[in-house]
Length: 293
Image 1 (cartoon, rainbow, N blue to C red):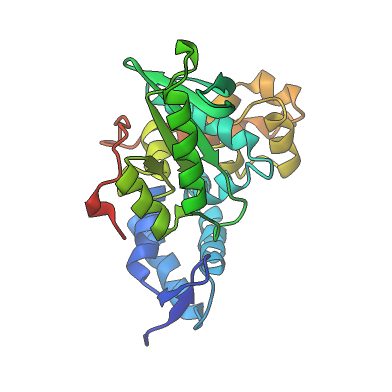
Image 2: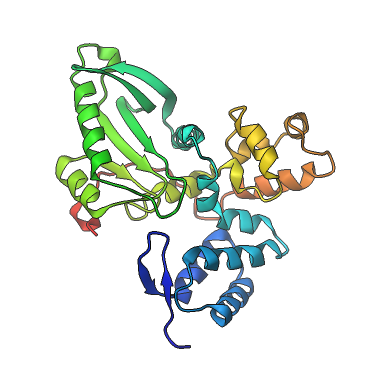
């Protein structure tokens, strides 16, 4: 087929690469035959200028019709994180749960006193004697990027906390975490100032997506077997993970009909079960020059 240019969420255009689509389907657990069928169908209907969101929707709809619908849920993780909004607070809770799964002790919405001013920290995490203050920057849409203003703000805030006269308020590091991506200037500044950035796929193989997949801490919003109202009801009661809904009594308590509960639990169990060779723990690394875009 002739080269087709597609439009990414941030407005940039790039050539459509069927191998990228195949890789994302494979990561979700789709078998070779299913992947080949979906890629062939997408290639047949793709048009110049088509948005990546449209391509995703086509692939997602086809995955939902496979014999294992939970694969569609795994394929939709990025969109499921967007669905945690719009306030951003569930994202902070979700981020805290991700870090807990990687061995950190966490708490959210912590008030600390810096050398010059008081601060509210989105997530405070501790592990192996290290204390980290984390700013969680949530975007409701895929095209949103976290820019240098956020990086400057976070660096200044955690430098102030690092010099706090109160030991209980001091942090060793500050992190800026987002569910999308960073601008080039934000990354350059972080590399220069030794600020840790974690984005959806940044740093390479150490981003938020990798943290989610390696620890199997998928958001509740990924479940295709729950309605939007059921998901909102659960999140309003601080239930944000798929693994937290593997209890039939809890599901019934929050309004899920008994006849649908087995399918919800089966899908949640699938998402929480690691594939062979994927069990690993996340250890943060500071952005290096090799990650420079």
